Structure formats: structure tokens, C-alpha cells
Length: 186
Image 1: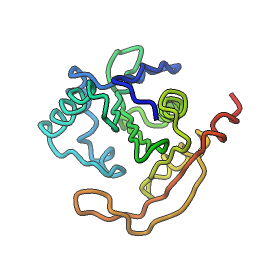
Image 2 (image 1 turned 30 degrees about the horizontal axis):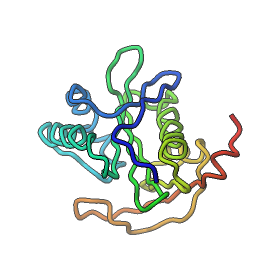
Image 3 (image 1 turned 180 degrees about the vertical axis):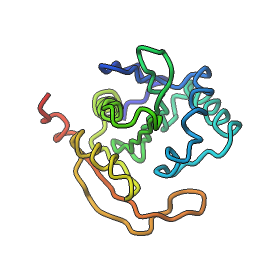
């Protein structure tokens, strides 16, 4: 797996996916602490100080060539504000987990799909993954549809998966191989 200090920004029709910056903290607080956002994610940040600490940690590790976690901001091109996020985690050589989130006010606008497609592209084209996977909380049918829309295939269901903070939840797993990615129709 090729490592790099920083991932390049990726432009989609509506967004710029880029490494998190300190200036994103307030925008992240604006959506990450909403109940509608948190109900479908594993890593729940419960206060403004926790969100700001997460942003600070993400920025601080960007200079580490050994890092295996890349957190990105999804910046709306028109406003310049972070309205979503994504992550890539190198789980083992050539296998990455991806995940995405979007401000609830921006749901059903196709922006989640733009984030997911950009993450898949970064994983296979920049980080040279051979396999990419994601987990979706079972009640989150929108993210399940998104995973399929970006070309991922359902692998399995887990009825009682450790979801962080001592919680367990039903989770669906999706995956894609590099061969499947490079065979996608553009």
C-alpha cells in the first residue's frame, strides 16, 4: 500500500472532498451533533468539545507518513462550507474501510453519492486498494442504497455488531474489489 502524507482533494460536481482543516470545526459541530446524523453512525461525538477535538486530532495526524486513517471534509463548492465528511481506514495492506456522513439538511440531493464515489476513487486510485468495504447500520436504508449505487455489493448481515460506545447494532456489510471498480461504467 502506497502511503502519503496528505491525500489530494477530489472535485465532484457539487463538492470538494479534501483533508479536514481546523476551520471545519464549527461546520462539523453543526451537523455531527444532530440526532438524525448520529443515529446511523458508530463514532458518536456528543459535544462541541468532542467534535473540535476530533477535528484537531485529524489535522494533527495529517503529517504522519505512518497513518492509516484519512478523515475528509465534504465542502460544498458554492458556499465553501463543510456539509459532510468521509473516511478511509487502511485495515490491512490493500484493504480499506470507507464511510461517509452528510448534514441532514442536505440529504436526498445526491451529495452522499458524490462523497461515496470520491472515496471509492481515492481508495483504489490513490491508495492502491485491492478491496474496499463499508458497514451500514441496518436501519439506514439510504446508505445501503448509496453503497449499491456506487457499485458495492452486499456481503453479509451481522445482527449484533459492536457499534462503539458499548452499543451493539444490526449492521450490513458491503464490498468492492479493484477489478469491479475498474470495470464500472462511467
